[in-house]
Image (tube, rainbow, N blue to C red):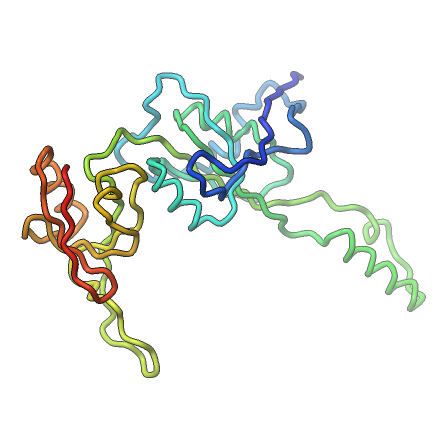
Length: 266
């Protein structure tokens, strides 16, 4: 047997992005120590359940990164914040188990060269102590007998989910987009789409400090064209950005129902 320890730095201050959506994962104290068998690496549940999300062999720009372990809050909001901070998703792990030490997430993050790891943990399965006490009280009230199994404490079970992120090089434009498919029609009683999603691509995140942010592009905008050349999908956008790199271009967008033209230097 060997003892594995890792140190987490306690902080109550918001992250550098100022969004404050996550805090350092801290378990009761600043130093986390645990006892584990020598085969710990072979039993890493984060590694066993890892699914790569990025097909481009994405990894940290650092040669030997030391991942930062963070406690996630709301997955969708956290994902957008990470994209806006200049990170891209490498992959994720999800599983249900008993108590799993956070060092497993760190070890896998080091193995795949991640810069940041967001971990989400929720209680799953077994009855809580309070509900167990209600069962005992009800049995006493009714004069029922209880077995040892009825009153025994059950081992905790948790749902774990972790996302692994790598910092991207400085972007040329600095947006993440998706192509939306319009609904055939709006059901009775529902408002129609506020923007024609069949045209262009929707901006889901604008990287802080990027040319796109400086030009005034916002999350939720529809990017329709660059220099009058239509942007039909993410691949077309990437091609146009590469072609016009170093030039000043006009981006035609639609913000809700308002058409706008933004100038940006790539």
